[in-house]
Image (cartoon, rainbow, N blue to C red; front, side, top):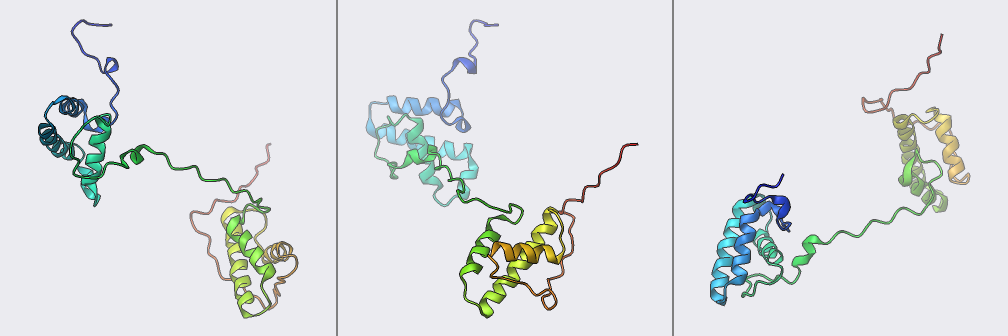
Length: 201
């Protein structure tokens, strides 16, 4: 229903920054229309003070004054001709979208271990034998067992970890389970409960 004399938001121009409200936008439009340059600057300064009260959380930022003037510049449609107290040449960066992150291209063979463990396997393949490789192998094996316990993927016995570690390092790392001892892991509440299948009667 369209009632004559009523002004609906749906009939108005879309606000670039609705957080400041339509009245602030009208003030900015008025400032742009002023013929005197000094008058435009004084009006802009008053508008910025009002904008600060509209969005007080901006004060948490060290450069919030810069942000306010950037917003004023954009809301004026870049038409406000004044001596800007801040550099507004990069104001448009506010609306720029971050570049999409590239999807990992490498294929993960055993997904339940994750990419970090896979990188550890690759490093162990090329490391020379010695205490440093032994320590990294120990940490990798413990992380693998922790991952298995967390995700409940198959068996979590020591033999499973030793077998996976040997296969994924091309046989370079062979755990001697008679002498190798894993860290003691206690299942936490965040670990998913093991599913049990119920037979239908």
